[in-house]
Length: 306
Image 1: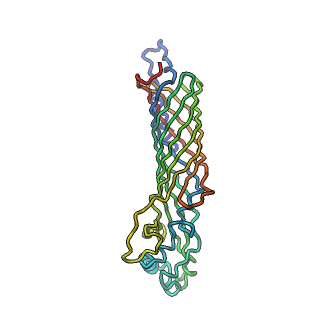
Image 2: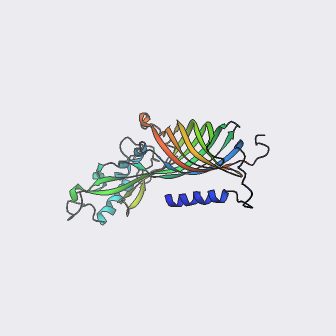
């Protein structure tokens, strides 16, 4: 992945470099960056794992794992499947009501892509302001251990059944800040940004796979109003379990000037809240990291600074 990204960056830089019509003629440097820019960016989001345990299904989570495991509606299906696979013994675990979680998952967030667009205005002295909107879809993953009561009656079996658990959320970030461009060469600037972040987390799903890798997937997202699901139970309208958080950010980037604006390659450090309703309010602040590739387009004659 790193090699592909490097190749793409190199190709774009080469394509954007002005070609010499004649060897005797020198290439003129692009005009100083000023005026209004529309920005489009793509990056790799490295989330903090600090809040990922929201999805682990323990007793503190609104999506409790045992609500599904020990329910008439789903517990019977899971028990039948595990018995048929000879992963549990019916003489040891008589029915779904005897399911026991030996160890809850220690969840982590997978790397994710982040896409965004925004606006920036640059003054002649290199100072400016920025407003950008970023979107990402982040997946949390982990494994929990379902007791098999030491595999009673199953020769050579393990003490537990390894099961997967997952969560998926969408994040929208709104960044407002100040920026400073410092010329390094005729074609390359150093850019420094600092600002305020407002973000919203929207929980999309929370599910288990029993057993992991080859089992059936069951949603544990609470749409039953906190009740145990049973045959014939209706569902409630799902209300987003995420919330709005705040934070700050700092960015450092190298900006390569091209005829239509600039191409940036940089890094953003966030220290921000990832909030969920009624969950770990004291632990919701954590670092997040983004490595990004950004196009700054400035060919708007009516906005361009004279």
